[in-house]
Amino acid sequence: MSTPNRASQVIVTALVAITLAACGGGAGATSLAAQTPQGTPAGALATQLPTATVMTTSASPASMGPSGPPVSNRPTDVPSRVVMPDLRIDLPVISGDATVPGNPADYPLCDVAQYLTTFPYPGRLGATTWIYGHAREGMLLELLLASERADGAELIGAMVDVYSTANIRYRYRISEVLRHATDRSAAQGVPPDQGRLILQTSEGPRGTVPKLQVVAGLVETLAASPEESRPSAAPRGCFVE
Image (cartoon, rainbow, N blue to C red; front, side):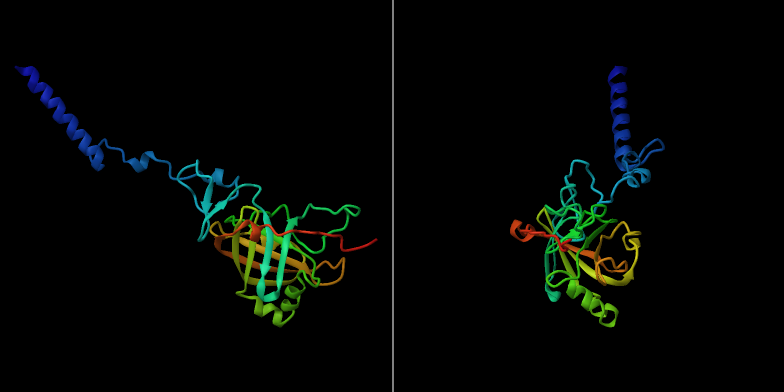
């Protein structure tokens, strides 16, 4: 007759243990949070570009921007168009490594903007995208002229749209106008929860070193159509030797 009683005691003891574990109680209980990794180690984060949001699963192909649709993290997602309607700027964007037949040394190219391949990916938090072009009519001349009025005060708060080859529209707001810049320090020190855009153009004739750099912060991501995101580009050499 003792066997059923002992079996009942074992069952009761097991139920108590399960209840304590479920409630996080008991001297020997270990919480689920203590068993679950809390994110990527700091050392691993230092070796990769931050994305907009730390995802809970590595299987997710995209991350979320400050607001809007998923932001592609593919290396092929690069700038394809830059637009500032108030300044009548609307240019296709191509790689800074692009050349034109017959004059591969002609740089930068005309009738397009270009992105620095060291700062290519739009929408990445903690990272910079760098787009540049000539201060010529139909290119970035209006940006230069605006910067020369009251040190560019009218540009502060203006919006810049950068479209990408992943059919995404990244919206940036200008926060700083750097005239006569001589280096790329504006690309450094981006907070991990922010994305940065630098627009650069010349301040003088060919060979002039100081540049105009306009700094903008990422505020929104929006879906875009392939027609909006992939304008036709016809780059040409600006200088005939």
